[in-house]
Amino acid sequence: MGVPPQHEKGARSRKRPRKEGSAVPSAQKEGSKASQSVSLPRLEPAAAEYFQRAHETLKSGFASDEEKGLFVSNVLEEAEAVAVPLSLDSAGSLLLQALVASAPPGSLCRLLQALIPSLRIVACHSCGAHILEAAVLRAPLLIKDGADDSGTLEDLVLELGRAVQGELSAFALDAHASFVVRTLLQTLGGARVGSDGGRGLLVLGTSHSRSKKAKVGSEGPTDFEVPNSFLSLLQGFGESFQELISDFITNKFFSLCLQVALEVLHRKLPEACSQLCCSVIGYLSSCNPAAGQSTLLVFLKDATCSRVLDKVLEVSDAKALRSFYKVHVKGQLQVLATHQVANFTLQRLIQAAPPKLLGKLFEELSPGLEEILAHEHLGVVTALLGACRKHGAHQQEVLQTLMEAFHCWEPPPRQLLCVPLIASLLAYEVYYGEEEEEEEEMMSQDQAAPSRPLSSVSYHGSLILQHCLHFADPSVVLRSLAALTPEDLVTLACDAAGSHVFDALLASPSVPKKQRRKVLRLLKGHCVSLACSKHGSRVLDAIWSRATLPAKQELAQELAEHEQKLRNDTFGHHLVRNFALTHFLKRRQDWDRLQEAEKKRRDLFAEILED
Image (tube, rainbow, N blue to C red; front, side, top):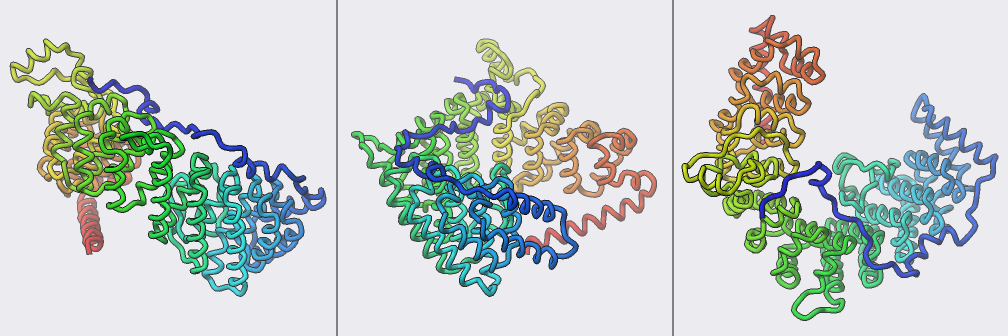
């Protein structure tokens, strides 16, 4: 079976289906109805008007921080008497979030004291949950600063945490309150996590929106200081989750809370994390065991439970991973790899596997690699290549297996064609459209297939090539790159995904300078086309940053001949500035000195980084 032709980008980047697991018992729905079982308090019209004016004033800004601090304290003092109805009001909630981000310790204490008695109503409300999250996030920052009311604030956070822990089944199963649980877990552990369950948690002391998925690593420190009492309560949460696993693990909101608990415990309380992992796997593997087969395989194919297992594998140690493979999935990897849900958990196992286990996984998966590609489960393939790159093991074996799947390992002349085949994720026969008899006749004469222009680059195909270029011996891929026509290299460089292949070519320490120059030389005469492309211009920037002075002079000479065209181009005008082409044309000696000085600065900076 050949590798199928690719469809639209969305089809290639298939996401895991998000279906809920088994039906949620009616008892689990209590949390979502908690705020509906009682009459919700509402703001009086006069109070609503006052807070609306306060919000407008806050958004208009202040002359000094002191003036703003006084305003925040005064408005929060007015808010204390109506904290619950204000939190449940859509406009009032936005105001409180903005105020809490700058709230002094005393004001935050009084706000929490007003909200905790109605905790479940507030937490299970779409607006109120945001206030609790903002308050919980603000608290550690104020406690760390050692403010006058820091002790009281610590006690209030603990009181809130114990209240949530006492009714964890209600809070963790509610669509809104589950966000409060996840934020609370991260605050108690002093760790911001990057998983799906942790999304929405921004830098301490700021308000945040769940609708905006901020990039992981761009929102502030991932670890922050918290009191020991917070870690003790976090450990208690781990025990509470263990007690509830058997009843609620198939609920998607509980699953997200459990994932965050696993990640935070892994970073702060590893022993408690190991116990929780054992409880999860122990329960899932004990449900209606079948003869000769682990029932865990059933849950691996469930969208909700498999996400929990993803996180379990991510935080497990090498011994636990080996046990998981041996007891539960050995001999079943091909089935998992071709399943639309279970293949994602297999990717996590491959990524987390130590070198010895990776060898067993590769041995079991390699015979069916072509079938995995045919199912378009390309994440499994990229995970396998990434793991081989990471551990420096089985690299040539996996490269050969990959090329065999694309039908370009034998006969040897086909190896020169591996880059366009992998980049487009098409098997040899599909890419060139040849019949078997014609192909055999051509190869009997030891000739390569006729050239066909590269028209598209797959995202996963680009990832595969990047991994291969970082292998200890990337010579096969380098020879194929050097065999491409200049037009195909330009197509690759001007593609959003393909341009990153050049990043790998330039950055990989295993690529010899001579072979790198051989590939880059093919771009001579096509630099203007690259410069006028969004992604091609970025490739030129990357080449420039690593080029020698003679290479820069040659590149600048080619571009300077079209300076006016580049200056008027959307992307080219950046290169006119970055490469100082005007200086190159009018003050050549100054330009040479400038480039030499820039090279010295880069070399000095590189030495500092190495030290």
